Amino acid sequence: MSKVLVIIGAPGAGKGTQSRLLSEKYGYPQISTGDILREMARADTPLGKRIKETMGRGELVSDEILAEVILTRTSQPDCNDGYILDGYPRTLNQAHLLEELALKQGKQVHLARIVVSEEALFKRLTGRRACPKCGEIYNIYFRPPKVEGVCDLDGARLTQRSDDTPEAVSRRFEEYRRSTAPLIDYYQQSGRLIELNGERPVSEVFDQLCAVLDGKTNDGETLSRAPGVEIQS
Ligand code: AP5
Image (cartoon, rainbow, N blue to C red; front, side, top):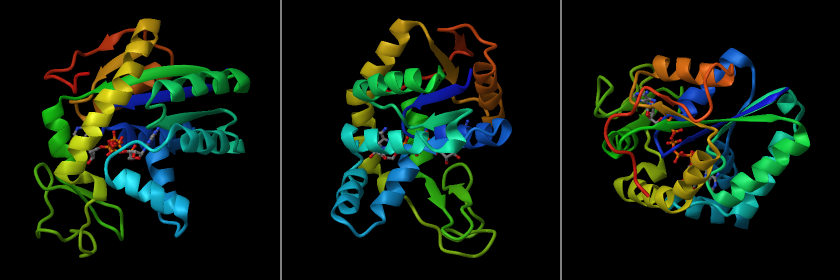
């Protein structure tokens, strides 16, 4: 049966990092709703402007827009054998839509949650800088460039995502507590959510996610308990 892997986690938990690696290994497309929305926000249209403003404030884009995005993207032929959802669902409504969709598409849903303490998340996000030319990612706390604000690889000036400012990050955490925490409770109650410690090195988190996708874990299992306190509801 073809598969859907849902990766849940607070902003900065590593959903994008892990989805990219999994996509390379398994060949399933990575569907990042954040990336799709950022692309839509670049369009000079009323919808693009609305999305840009919402994201810039660190708030969630409406369930209606997300429904359209997910239905359109997952009906592409490259999703036939399976796909990885990075950033979807984020609300209970979105989870219900996904259940219906997966049933219709005949896909088995695997659920994994990456848990990271709020303190670590805050530094990961507010310290993140990217090279607009080559895409290299830096972090001013953990992996600073040799020259402040400049890419080591091509000398381009580094940029910061508009929603990685301390104010927008705090708002994203609030949204997560308000909208995504109930979704986690819902999945936990179903006993199908596998929880991973996202403060381990990227390669270790990756190995654990591979085990989830390969069906080598038990439902509702916790893989290496996370230290610290994640954003609480
Ligand atoms: P989105 O783009 O999905 O952002 P996010 O989930 O808030 O946060 P990130 O993408 O920054 O985090 P991530 O978990 O992917 O971590 P990453 O791998 O980048 O969404 C942006 C916005 O779009 C939302 O605020 C909302 O407005 C809208 N949106 C998107 N989906 C929506 C939906 N379904 N409904 C409504 N609105 C939606 O890693 C972060 C950093 O940590 C990186 O620098 C990375 O190098 C580092 N890192 C990763 N793993 C590790 C590790 N194990 N150890 C140390 N560092 C690590």
